[in-house]
Length: 450
Image (tube, rainbow, N blue to C red; front, side, top):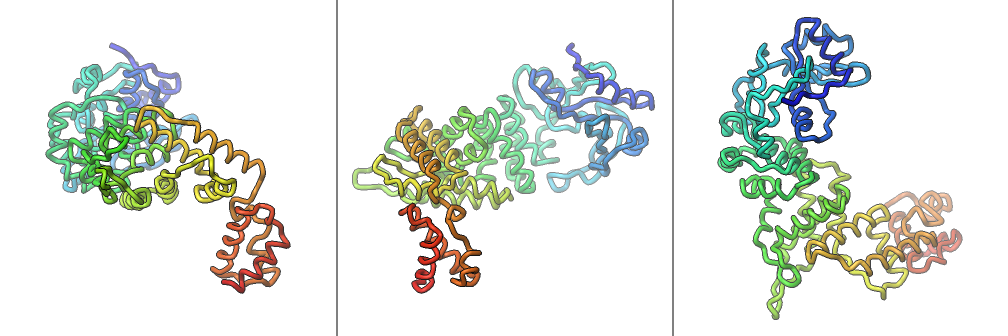
């Protein structure tokens, strides 16, 4: 039997419990990932010491979740979360137990957990691995299996169904048949879970090392129908033309390449959702081919609906929807320099690389390769514009709103913003006009025009 490799600091931490008559165990992810030879330094501890005992033993603690038995201990520069052995009362809302009872038996604590591979523990005294639910067997078989009756586990906490999909994606494990069938039967219960918790699990799944596996489990269990109906609707949707895959599998392939290319989270999310607007914009032409005019705008709005539903940050919502809205740009060598500058202005300097990455992922999902000549040429021309330091954004103008006020051209108003944007459009077309005196004079003319 393998033993968990305990550092001197962990041993010292454990001795504080032992000399006070208590036991301490590492539990969950750190033990599981050690056995899988994965890095994990996020330690969770469980103990027979009750919260007041832990607070008595250690001088510096934080009441992280005192009602549920959790205290965070500040120990020699680290923060360790320690939870008392416990059992849980009835779950009436498919999410939270009505009550928590502290117990003195480790097994009673382990059997309340979600999956066998997360119910592995290691003694802080000697590193001995405790496996009361055949977690080691399931690790070897690479499967996610609920402890005991899976329906009972999922009725207790519906979020566990999403966690099963997320762990399958993180670990590239299969979900065991009885556990999978229980999710299929109870998938509607996921509606009881808060949007914030769903978002946390869902995005962790999408950004994992094997997201396609996790998303497929969401689809076949019905979780996707409830949580991401916009994505679920793409399954079996024919695109025609150069697309050999249906829309759903094209989106999954785009995400796959975004992951393989190690693109950032904004690009990965954009890759998964970039074409969801095609469902409502498909039109058939006389030659029996399909067109999807405006699908990028529709898709961006649909993603914004998803982001609002999941309560994502405004930054994440904007960055992803902005990439989706602009992903259909079509560059050619005939673009003028002004056209390149207008492109930079529309997309934003900070989004250029992400948009190019998304285009690469999309192209690879269609054909397995990308014709990079045009993209490289565009990037070279963008670089040239940066080096010329031509005006591309409002901050590049040689005047600003304060100048308009100081020169008594206009008072603060919405009209001021319109004037500055009109000036920017002009100097993007004619860079030589970005001179203070010209811009002030032109501002006076625009005040009269507007």
